[in-house]
Length: 131
Image (cartoon, rainbow, N blue to C red; front, top):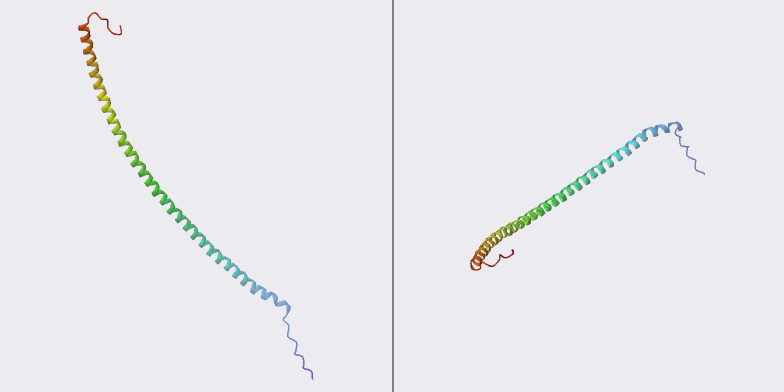
């Protein structure tokens, strides 16, 4: 005895396939759009965070450079102050030396005039030097 064949399966009507496409396609599109929007939001948030971190780092670097420049300015100002003190001291010593030289020159001029007058009184016949 041969087994009996099962009854044929009922076939779906071929005209109803568009109902599946119309219900499943918008869901698929909505899922893809939601996935793209979620990814974009996550990456843009990360991008903004990276930009914030970079700008924060740049601010820190700028602050350190500014502090270093201030210390250089202070060092240069101190060096100028020390140089000015030495220059003022040297100028005062130079002024004192000039005053002493002027006094010595006056004394030498007075001694020369005295010697010249003595020489004239001792030797009236002698001609004047340079004449």
